[in-house]
Length: 213
Image (cartoon, rainbow, N blue to C red; front, side, top):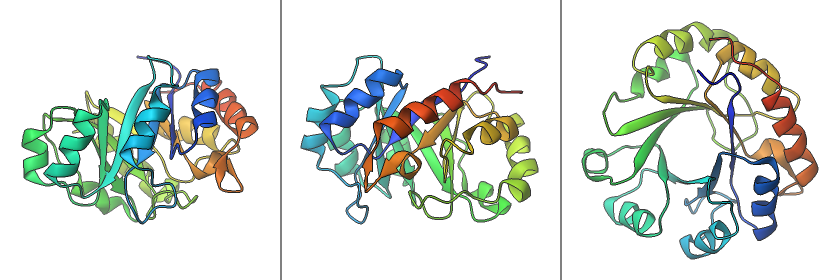
């Protein structure tokens, strides 16, 4: 088992942000394809930004209730994974040619029951009630349920922890949940854009935190 969590920087919108991810050797870069998000980018621009990423950084298409048409566009654009919030349609599960991460906006521990056990789902993203809102879910009340899920249908899947992470709390998050991946967006931003200094600090804190289980 890897002792330190991998890093996903989500909501990439600018070319210079690709350089920040290269510098910290992030494992994942997230691009948001949802018109209601201020981090939404056209697929064509995301493709251009991806060309500036190191080849070992996997690209994640972050979506909300995508239809088959959007899935096919994402596949044709060469994304490595699709992260799905909201409704996960059966046709997406059955027909996706790329790995799926299902996201759960965790308002209470019972929300974990919304996650679907399926062979095409390669990972689960636990996020706050409002994705990208800069707030954590209730770690204390959810801790036992998450640990139980890790030994159940999370087993053999990638466990991604998101929701309100930043340099000041990522070490504690890793200690409590031992995720495979820590996923940050607003927690490394300043004035609406990703800031190099904060990304470097986040990466240092995350990689100096050891998973316990």
